[in-house]
Length: 298
Image (cartoon, rainbow, N blue to C red; front, top):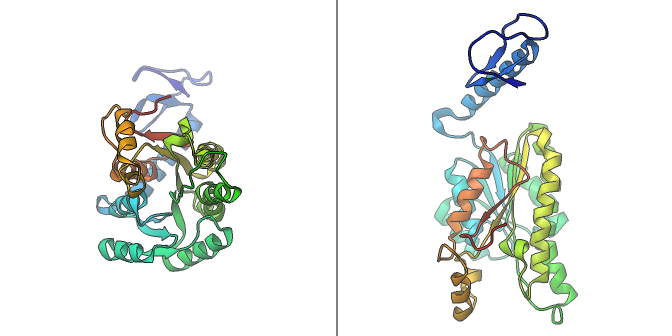
C-alpha cells in the first residue's frame, strides 16, 4: 500500500492505470487488483455489520462471565447485558447471591468450579446447548489466600493458581475452537495491579495475575488470524466486598497512593470490558488495559 495525496494521476506497475481507493479512507490507495479485493472485502464486512446492528443494537452474542454474580463480575455481566449480549454468569458456591442476582437482573447463572477442567467442560456443553455458542468470554473468577512465603502452604498456592490462572486456560481451551469456526471471538482476562507491581504477602495471587498478562499476549497471537481478540484488564483497588474487608487504616494508606484520590468502582472495570468486547474492537488484541486511577504506570 502507498499513501498519496487525493487526486492526481498515478503510475501503477508501469501502467497509466488509476489507483483504487478504499471507502472512507481517501488517503490510502492500492494497486488495482489488491484494491478491488480490499474494496470488496470492506463492502462485505460493512453489509455484515449493518445486518448485525439492526436498530442500533449489536446482534446478541453469547457471553460467559466467570465469577459473574458479585462485585466486579456482576458489574461486567450487567454491562454486557445492557450492550445486547446474551450473558450467562458463572458462580462457584454462593447460591443465595446468584439467585438474588438473577432476580434483580434477569441474567441466568450457572454454578461450576472454573478451576476444575471437567466441571468447565460440562458447563460449556450445557451453555452451548441452552444458549448457543460462546463468542465472548470474560475470565473474571478469582480468589485470595494471602500469606507470606513462610506461612503459605502448598494448598494455598495451588488454590489460587488453579482458580485465577487455571480457569483462563480451562475456558479458553474449551471455547477457542468454536470462536475459530465462527471467525469471531472476544476474550478478556481480568488481571490485577498486583500482577503488575507485586504485593507483599501475595506471591500466589501476584504470580497468577502476572501469568494472566503473559497468557493473554501469547493467546492473542494464536487468535488474531481467526478474528479472535484476547486482551486483559488490570484493575487497581476497587470498592468491592474483598477490598472493604481491608483494615481501615491500611485502606487509607492505599487511597493515599492513588492519584485520583479514590477507590475504583466495579462499573469502571465493566466499561473497559464492554469496550474490549465490542464487535468494533477487532484491531485491539494482546493489550492490557490498566484501570487503576493512576496508581501504577509503566
